[in-house]
Image (tube, rainbow, N blue to C red; front, side):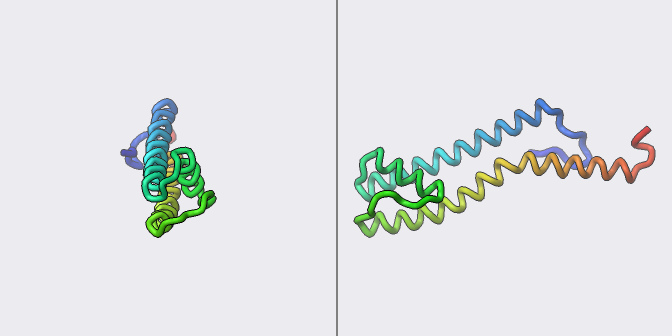
Amino acid sequence: MFEHRKDALLPRAAFLRRLLRHFGLSAAILAGSLALGVIGYHILEDQAWVDAILNAAMILGGMGPVGELRTSAGKLFAAAYALYSGVVFLVVVGVLFAPVVHRALHRFHLEESDRDDPGAGT
């Protein structure tokens, strides 16, 4: 997916396309996770769609549920969804920052190899 450390640095336009792809993947992960939470709250807690969206978005965002949970199934779902949301947060951060961190490390290795090879600068 990423270029090898001995390859040339990716041009800026290609890097921006890579960033856009990673942003799209992150948005898809978040949208799928939100849909999972909305459906869970709607079915297990019999919440209206708007309330289910609110509760799912609040948990996915790390804030906690807004409405009171009445059923045992709803409470177990909320617990599992909260743990899942924590993992999703870490995954999305990793997906978003991977191209930036890779480019920084790639640039560092290119500069390092230029120092090691005296003929590279001429």
